[in-house]
Length: 278
Image 1 (cartoon, rainbow, N blue to C red):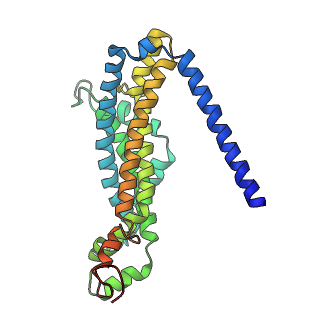
Image 2 (cartoon, rainbow, N blue to C red):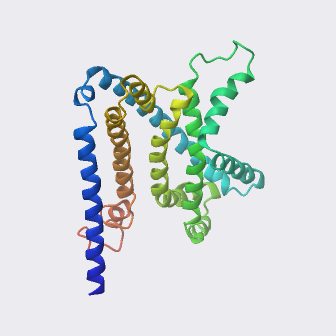
C-alpha cells in the first residue's frame, strides 16, 4: 500500500507540474506573443541565418573537440609522466576557468600578440568561437574518455598483451571500443552542452541566435516573441543531437540482440543461426 501511495503521489505531483507549466506557456503564447511579428519574414529570416551559423559552428566544434578529446584522454593514461602531466594541466585549466574567460582571451588577447594591423584574420569572431569551444570541450571529452578507459577491466589489456599485441594495438582494437561505449553518454551530454554554450558567443560579436534576440528585443521592446524563436531553434539542435547520441548508443549496445555484440554472437561457434545453443 505504501508503494502504491508513493507512486500515486508522484504521478499527482508530476501531473500538477505539467499542468502548471502548460498553463503558463499557453497564457504567455496567447497574451504576450505578437503573432504578426512572430511570423514576420524579416524576423524569421534573421533567426534562420543565425541558426545556420550556429549549426556550422556546432558541427565543426563538435568534430574537433571529440577528436582532440580522444588524444587528451589517451594522454591522461599515458605511461609517460610528462605527457600525463601536460594532459592533466590542460584539463584542469580549461575545466577550472569559465568558457567566457577563455573566449575573451582568444578573441581579445590573441590579436594583441601581433603588431597593429598585422593580425592575419579580418573576421576573427567565428574562428575564435570555434577555437574556444573546441579547446574547452576537448577537456571534458578527454575526461570522459579517460573514465571510459578506466572502466574497462584490466584483464582486457592483459589478455590482449598475452596474445602478442603491443600496448598501442591493444588500446586501439580491444580497450578503446569498450571505452568509447562507456564514455558515449557523457560525450553526448557534453556536446549538447556545447550547443547551449554557443549562446555565450554573443559577447564576442558572433551573430548567433541570442544576438538576434537582443537586437529584436531592443528594437521592438518585445522579449517574448523572439524568445519563442530562440526556444524552438535551440530545441531543434539539441533534440536532433540527442537522437544521434541515442542511435549511437543503440548501435554500441553490445549486450543486446540488436547491438553490435548481439549481431556478432549469432555467428559464434557456440550458437546457431536462430540464436539457440548448438
